[in-house]
Length: 425
Image (cartoon, rainbow, N blue to C red; front, side, top):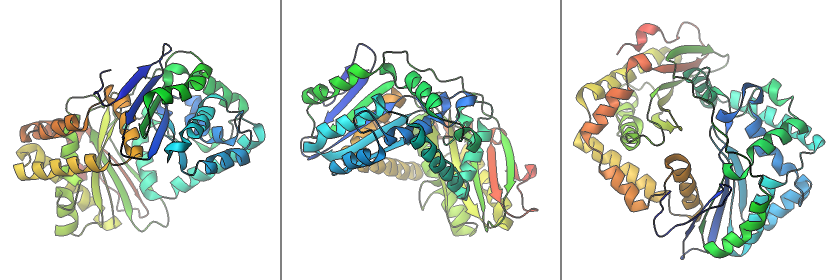
């Protein structure tokens, strides 16, 4: 993988990749241990295990054998430590002052090499995760998105809920955790990224004891992604005053040459206060308070999603006007002014996102994981600037076909559901 001169890259003989971006003018540093393994790598009997592991490694390791000592070690860093699980990765990361870097690396290394999986602690954390699932179900915006994913990629690994199902999570114990961990947290599955007040040589010295502990193993392969399934789903739930909607179309994958143009299309559709959907749905017709569109990329597929919430009686009109706007972009394209505003938003978002050691560390990881290459900020800006109106229209025509639409609506009143005939622009 090529990297610009300002970055350091090393790959161990067993496949662990290390990426470092020194930033001389800062006094902080950020480090992330990324496992190329998320919910889309789980078998059906393993749903939620990637997320379960992300929680439970914090309950005790060889050096920090219980939650109290783990919490004390975290607090002594003076910075922050956190973790998350996605569809394709799990990540453990932290940000500290440069003097605390050795302790941060030690703690993160413990999480990915020597967790204990104590039965009593696992039982307590199961209850916490089940509460997390319940909380997600109580938030309509979160839950309608989960419904959308489950139907749009129905039958495939991307449909797996990251948090898992209650009954499955309730069954996970030390055996399931240790088996999953041993098969997953291996040298070729690990990416380590760092940015800030870091020198690559000393940083590699800190990593060596951790790298020596990693099982060699084989890289985990993602299960074959099921084809996208167009659908219309209305789900009713009591005590909701609004209908929450997610509409989605197939979109380019991480490495597709049209991914940047698709992102700019998302900005034009619903990326700001002058976007087409904001102006049409909120400003002209007062159908909703907020509406937005965003792109979700994965290794071999993606989705251009539109999310909104409105009164149940206005849901049908909102859907009809949204699809009419999509049809206009397909037929007439976007104007030079719209595209320039979208490019400015994209450039600004990119530059703002790279103004801290933490965000630079995340950028390194995302580029390696998603594009398989690290680009300088100038290269990324050039990619944005090169997109043309013709390219955006071509991408719109490929993506925004009504026949490929998936739509999930979560509301409380029967009789106001979206109908098939509402999906004709």
